[in-house]
Length: 278
Image (tube, rainbow, N blue to C red):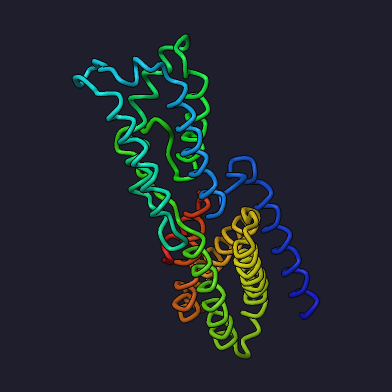
């Protein structure tokens, strides 16, 4: 019996690892850290200043007529600079300043359209550099630049993700205790419980590794993918054994919710069973 259980555990682990590898092609390869976002915002400020200096003097002092009326270029550029300054000041470890990023992207969009239509104008090259920065910033907040209608500008900061990882580890510990209690001396439940236990161990390890890497300012997309894959496997197994593992599922729900938070932060998709457990 023990040999059979061990074989099942190995098979489950191999299948789960294969599932992680199979989804790599469609998943994001990076998530910018808070430090990288700060440097990107500073680049926007620096490159926008260089663009402003490169513009023709008569344009900077002039009036541009657009579809929404006349625009005082100097005042517009001052407002753009103010939006960037406000973003620099408000972006913090506990505040991703999503609303401020949205304001900046909306402010910059008319200028982007104006400059892209005039490649011969002085400053066109410098604006392309700014646009590259804004495209990268938008991507880190889950949107595109220019924004599409009803776009939701949202980014979870490092601190929020670390708290979610800690919650996963804590909830996994409670789920493991509930699992042992549910199995007891029931031999029929030992094999499925052992497979679930393997995934719980791997989930806790990945959550700890993710927190450590984010704390060190390192990329952690691989750990996030492992967390999602392990959570999906656990949710599926508990759903299949709902009658026997009902109490286990109640403890698991807390971990599933935190796992969903991590998945959202990294742009990953969780399975329906995990979503329902939130």
